[in-house]
Structures are given as C-alpha cells and as structure tokens.
Image (tube, rainbow, N blue to C red; front, top):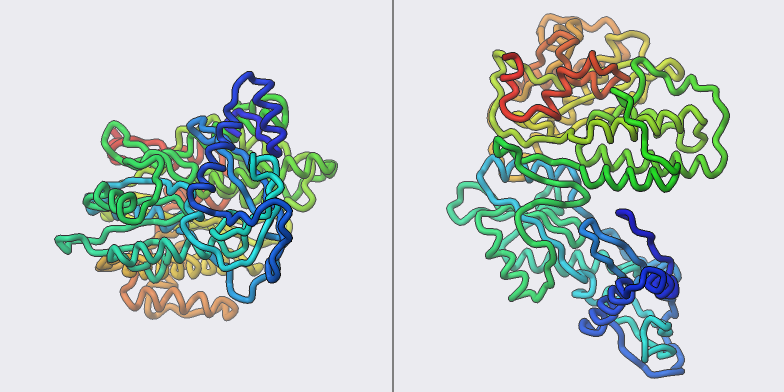
Length: 531
C-alpha cells in the first residue's frame, strides 16, 4: 500500500521492523494499544478467568496499513463474524460521492469554506450493546492471557458502525444540524445570517465541512465532545481524492494520489509499469463481447477483478472518461479472457497517461443561447443487442453526476433506444432537482436536456406529435409530461457536439478530445478555447 509491504499480524510486524532496522510497525501497534487503554475499551477480568455467562467468546487481530502521507497505522479488529446475527438492523450509512460533489458545489456557489477532518478512534467513542469477550494475545503485552470484556464499539463488531453513527448523529443534532432527507449523511443547518446552509458530509469518521467558520465547529468537536481530530484544515485530500485550486482559483477534484497507488499495485501484479502509448481507454468501436481468446486462469481472474475494482473507484472519484470502458469490462468479471485483461491493462495505461484529468467546480451559469450543455446519448452492442445509455448532468458549469449503463430492454430501432435514454435522463433530473431542494436550494426555472436525435426531441416537444411505436409509450409520455410541466426544455444538438458520447461508446481520441478537454482538462473560461 503506497509502496510499503503490508503486514499479516503482530509477529509479521516484528519481522519487518527487524528487517528494516526500525520500530515503525511496533510503534504503530503501541499507539493503537495505548488508545484502547485510554478509552477503556476492555474490562479486565484477570488471567485464566472463564468467559462470563451470557457472553460470547470472539477473537481479535491487528490490521496494518500505510496512509497516503506515509504514516504507519495499526488497528485492532474484532472477529465479529463469530457472533450471532442481531435481530435489529446493523445498517450505518455514509454520504454518497454524488452528494459530496453537490455539497462542494454549493459551498463554492455560496462562498463557504471547505474543510476536512478525520476523527481518530471514532468507534471507541461509542459503547457497544453486544456481549462479547476475548482472551488477550501477545500484542496486549502484560495483559496476555487475561480475559477481557469488550465495553466499547470495537472495530469489527456487527453493531459498531451503527453505534458510532448514532453517537455522532446525536452530537450534530446538539449543534443544530439536521439530516438532509435525500442524503441522510449530509447534515445541514442555516447560516447565522440565514442566507444559505452549512453542511457536514459524514463518511464514517471522515468529515467534509462547508461552513462560514469551520474552525469554530472543529473547536467544539475537540473541546465539548472530546473528539481527537487528525488532518484538520482546508479541503486537500478526502476519500482518496486530491483537491486543489488551479491558477484561476477554481476548485479541482483530482484523484492523482489514487492513480499513483494504482500504478504501484499494477507493478506488483505484473512486474512493470502500465504502457502509456494509448490515447483512449479502448480502441474506437471495440467490442469486447466478441473476444474469443483463451479464458484466464485463477491468478489472471484475480488480477482482472482487482483492476476492474480499482477502475470503478477511479470513476467514482470523477474519471468519467473511462466510465464506458469500465462498465463494459465489468460485464466479464466472472469469466474474463486474455483479451479482456489486455484491455484492462490498456485502461490503466490511459489513466496514467491522462492523470491530469479532473473535475472543476465551475459555478458560473452557462449562456444557453450560445453554449449548450448536452446530457444524454446512446450506442449499440453487437451481442445481446442492448443499447448503452450515457448521461452527463451539469450544475452550472460542473459535471456533478454521470451515468453509463446498458438498457434493460432490447429495442428494435434507434427511436426506441433514444426514448429509453431520454426517460432515464428525465427521471434523474427529477431526482437531482428534488435533492437540491432538500439541500435548501431554491430551484427556480427549468432544466435543460440536450440530445442528438431530432425525431425524439420533436416527438417530446410538439403537442401534436403522435406515437406510432406503442412499446415505448411509457417513455414517450414520461418525457412529454416533463416538457409540458415546464420542468425542462428538450433541445436538439448535433451529435459531434454531444459530450455524452464519452459515456455511451468506445471512442477515438481525435473524435472526442475537443469535448473531453472542455470537461476535464481546460483551466479557465471554456469559451476561450475557440480563440
């Protein structure tokens, strides 16, 4: 992880420290065990004491990791899978990446400060309801062999996530926050002047804050609630993604460190860096479903699944340019072929070559009389005959969400596929508008939806239009209803100007670069590209 060998257990920590001539892993272990003692996680019943009646015996083990800033970290984990499944729900939610991007966009729009922090040993601030006990191992030092009852929400127990979620939610409620109805893990409260809302996005123990005065909120977390905070300050790194401002002061969301980590993983798997002599994720017009090469062995399958999993998180962090390739390659995870693995290697090489791609949070409202913002398109697959819907959602000048997925039905003509894509886009627009309302945004006026099929646009927009293909009736009426209600305007544009092509087909660099550069590479006013 980040170029360091990761340990299996405490004995492995002793081995590596001896090999490297230092005590970094032992020091990390001591820090973790001291924290457990500080929070009184265990109740010591003494050496040789039998497990109390009504308590269940479990094991605990240490997990080691190296953070992005080279910090060595140890974490004691309970083997919670050994306990009985509780009757109550154990669900504990986190903020979605889409919700986080919307929160960041609103912070930029309303002039709020963006901060991030990490709550250290978060789970240990909550008590557990589970009755479990363990026998201490060598990592406990003088307590080895003692019977220990777990009193706090130790990592790994079934209810620990839920108990921490309830504990921190109570703290936020005391500070006047309430959960957004559409994104329950975005907490919000009105600003003191009532001009907008302040937000806290909660991802377990990682917090993103958009506030007028985040320092005051951080001070309360430390002084009033006694939380131990790490990495507190202006938003620079969060959930594996870098944040910075370009030379024009525009906030950028950039998964550079994550891609560097992918390269390290690639080198360990294949013994070399990915080849970067590629200009697109897959070849233009490629059809991986037609591949007839040999099936991969078990090691190759593991490598392929690992690469695809890494690509999926890269997409979540904003690399929309590889979304279609990743969606396609994900279809072959259960039985990939040699050709599919070669394609995955190509995608990795592309990500490295174009690792400067990022999402810029542009809050200026586009001039729709000149520069349209298209949102959806579709393309075909050779086998299976299911079309692919590609959608980009823009909030002002920011690509806030994107979508690439095979349609659930097989259509007999372009008209039907385009209407299915249009209906999907309309439903997502309705969802985004409602989410914005729940985030305290007064949504005024209509949204704009752009597509490159003129027949579908005319059928949706003209009151006198008739439907001659009855099997698309539901999509037809859903889109027309949205247009008639004045919720959105459906506008036709030329296909060569449609950036949703990035999400609906395997494209060539020359074909798509003018659109991709605008979305992910251009710094400053995008209108200046024509000069």
